[in-house]
Image (tube, rainbow, N blue to C red; front, side, top):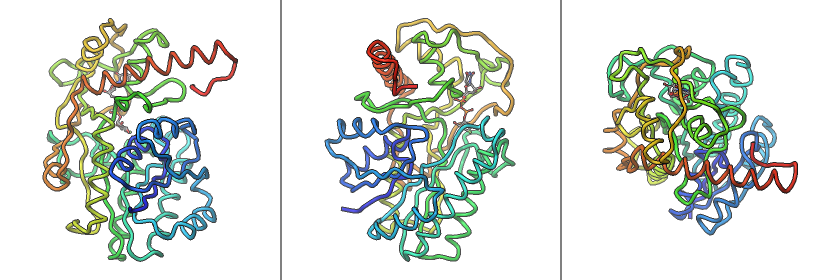
Length: 354
Ligand code: UFG
C-alpha cells in the first residue's frame, strides 16, 4: 500500500481527495495547519471511508519541520500538494503572504523530494493561468497569460518552479492539474466547503443566500458577450476533481507518464453562465433565489471552459456529475452545516463553523 502525503488534506479539495485515495487503498498522511479548515473534517473522512488518515498539524513554512517530517516518513511514494492560500482579493492586499505560502512552501517540498531520488508530485494549479483565453474550449496548449493577481501568479510561477526542477532531476515526476471551478460536496454530506467569512465564490454565495444567511446575490455584470450576458465558467463537482487526482497519482506511481512534467485541465467541458447556475439552484432546491444584477467585478474573465480531451484520453478520467448533481450536494451540505451551527449557537456561544 503506497503512502501518500496530502498537504492541505483537511481543506475543501484536499479532504475529498483523501477520501478517494483511501477508497483506492492508499495509505494517507495529512499535513495541515488548519488555517482554513478544522480537525472535525477528519471525522467526516472517517465516517465515509471507515479509516482514519494519519494527521500532523504544522505549518509547512516551518522548514525544519518539513525536513523532520520527510526524514520520519522516508517511505512516502507521492505528494499531493494542496496547502496554499486561495483568495484573489487577499493576495492583492498581501502579496508576500501568498508568495511565502504558495511558493516558499513549494520550494521546501521540492528540496525534500529531490533529496529522495525517485519522487512523485501532484500540484494544484488553476485555469487562471490562461487568463482570458483566445479560443474556447481551452486546451493545455493555450498560452499562459500575464496573471491578474498575486494568487494567479503563484500558480504560474509554481508550475515554472516545478518544470525547472524536473528538468534537472529526471527522478522527479510531477503533474500540474489546472482546475476550472470546483463546487459541491461529498454526496454523504460528511465533508464539504467551509468558507470563512463572506464567500467570494459563486456557489457558496448562492447557497448562503438560499438559506437566508445573505440577503441577495449580486450577479457581477449582464452585458458580457455571452448568450445571456453573464460570465461563463466550467463548474466541476469536487468528487470528480478528487478522482482525477487519484488517476494522476497512479500515472506517476506506476511510471506511465510520458515526460516528467505534465499538465492537465480538469473541467467538465461544459460552460455555464451565472444565470444557468442560479437556475440550477432554483431547480434543485425548489427555492427562489434573491438576486440582482450588479456592475462587473474587476478581473473577471468573460468565459473559461475546458477542453477535457487530454485528461479523458491520457488519464482515462472523465467528469461524471452534472451541474445539478453538484448543486444538490452543495445545497444539502449548506442545509446540514447551518442546522449544526444553529444547534451549536443554541447550546453555547462557541461555534466551530464560521
Ligand atoms: N459571481 C457573481 N457573484 C458573486 C460571486 C461570483 O456574479 O457573488 C460570478 C463571477 O463574476 C464569475 C462567476 O460568478 O463570473 C464565478 O465566480 P467565482 O468567484 O466563483 O470563480 P472565478 O471563476 O472568479 O474563480 C476562478 C477560480 C479561482 C481563480 C479565479 C481567477 O476559482 O481560483 O478564477 O480569475 F483565482
